[in-house]
Structure formats: C-alpha cells, structure tokens
Amino acid sequence: MYLKNLRLYQYKNFPEASLEFLPGANCLVGLNGVGKTNTLDAIHYLCLTKSAFNPIDQHQIQHGTHGFFIKGEFDREEKLLEVSCVVELGKKKIITVNGSPYQKMGEHIGLLPLVLIAPGDDSLIRDGSDERRRFFDSLLSQIDNHYFKTIVQYNQLLKNRNELLKRFHEKGKVDDLLISPFDRQLINLSKIIYHRRSSFMDTFAPTLEANYQLLSAQKEHVEIHYKSDVEDPGFSGQFVKNLSKDILLKRTTIGVHKDDFKLMINGYPLKKFGSQGQQKSFLIGLKLAQFEVFKEEKGFKPLLLLDDIFDKLDDERIAALMKLVAKGDFGQLFITDARPERSEKIMESLQIAAKFIELG
Image (cartoon, rainbow, N blue to C red; front, side, top):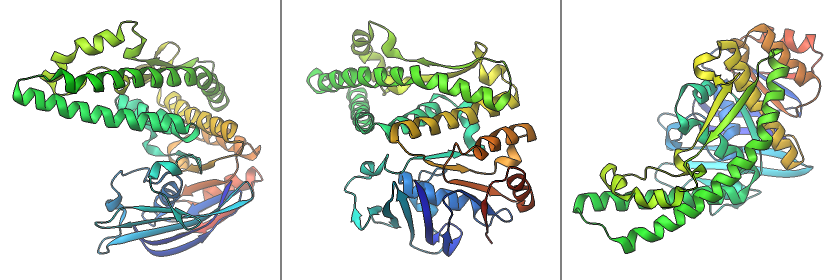
C-alpha cells in the first residue's frame, strides 16, 4: 500500500499545498515550523480519521478560516482509493472513500493501516496507563473490527453508568433496576476485551523482543506484563460489590478501562530502571512490532512515518533502524528532517532511493 499524492487546503499552517510521493522513501525537509510534522499528521487523518497529536478537530483549522480539506490517493493492493476529509466549524466531520461518505467514522478504521514513530512516543513510558491502553486499543482496532466495535460499546456503556452513579450520588438513592443492566453488560464486555488483549499479547511480546534486539544489540530481556481486574476469578462479584464505592466516587472503579500494560526490562519497570537509550530502543521496537502485526494481519505493508527521529536518536540506533529500511522490510516510508544534508548522507550510504520534498 502507498500514498500517491496529498492535497491540503486551510489545514494548520498550509493555506494550500499539493504533494506527490514515491512508493518507497520520501523525505520531508525544511526549517522547523514549515509543516513537516503537519504533513505527516494529515496522512494520519486520512488513515485514522483523526490527528495523531491533538484530538480536537477544530484545532487543526488554519487561523482565520472556517474549515479544512485533506485529500489523498492511495494504491491499496493495486486498487485506487481516493480518500478525503472535510472539517467545518459547526458541522459534522465528513470522511469519504471514492466519493462515498461514511455514516460512522469507525467504518474506516483498518482500511489504511499506519505506524507513526514520533518524539512524543515517550508518553507511553512516562505517562499513566491511559496512554498504553490507547496505543494497544488503536492497534487492535486496526486489525480486528469486532474488537473496535466492542471497545466502543464498552466505553459508551461506561459513560452511561458513570452518569447514573453521579445521579445516585446527588439523590442519595440507588435504583437497582436501572443500574443492573449496565453491570451485566460491562462485566460481559470486560471479559471479552480482556481475553482478546491477553491472547494478542502472547504473540505480540516475542515480536517486540526480537525488534528490540535488532535495534539495541544488547542482551537485555524486554517484555510487557498485561494487568487487569478481570484476572481475578471473583471479578464479577467484586464489580457488583463495588457499587457503594462507585457511587461515592461517582465513577466505575474496576473493569478493563483500568487495565495496564507494564513495560519491563530485565524484570524491572522500564520507566525506573531503563536508560534513555534502552527506553528509545524499546519504543521503536514497540512500533516496529506494530508494523509487523499489521503486515501479517493485512497481507500488505502499512505506511511508516518517522517524525524527527534523527534528532532524537543516537547514531547507533539510527544506523540500526535505517539498515532495516535498506533491507526492504518496509514499504512506503515518510521521514521528516530539518537538516536535508543529513538525510541525503544516510540515504546515500545505504543506497536507498529517496524523494526529497522541501517545504516552506
């Protein structure tokens, strides 16, 4: 799969732009602030219906205008897909494929798989469990539509139950007939989501470790420990017993929305015991494992976007990553770099044919 071209109108810092790409490596170069990362984010929009960096669509609209338009032509297994995204103030976002709009944005997820490696990825280590759940939910949603629908249903039920809890808290009175259906459905969906996440980690973890070893040339053992309330055989009973506590706190206190994926190195938490280099290798290994999962599940290579990695990685890790690229393990590649001479030197040394696109 590859993106042939991209059209932007009133998107972030672009009044208007038209870009053409090669099926292989594409280097977006130029000074900081010219729109290199914004271009990658526009590609992310077309693939996943949202920004990778800011969840609020209106914030992507160019200042002083009332909406933006993005369009791209993808070749997916020799089938042309023209994908467009329109966002206007006060109106519903519209995503179309070959002129046909979606009724629900979720119908698009998985059609155009994409992996983005960006400086902000360290939030997966630095921040709380929300970030890690979001990463794995997005990954699973792109390869398993049933999982996507299940997690959407769970989150909607959770929101509704929490609203009930707030109402009970305000009134000082519980209505068992109202809360019981939510409890039964959330317990059931928690078990379904838990088993899907758990089975996925059995195959994902070895792929992560293999990629870590390729990048780091180290002997450390890396792994992910998936932790969930549902592991407890008494989970269903505890969920119901927690009602008084949930009302007091006005939120549902157990369930798969509290799960965590603990990132480990040599049996210890990566956040506390991993060096900066080890953490970077872990994150890239994580994203490359995501790439391999997509390739295996979809039968074709997803897009790979590398944002500003040459400034964030040491020479050894850059060399290890680019050697993988040179081997042809990846399909279409997008790289941003504020120093074109550096990218040119790397591409030339590895004999990678690349198109350089200067922005600004």
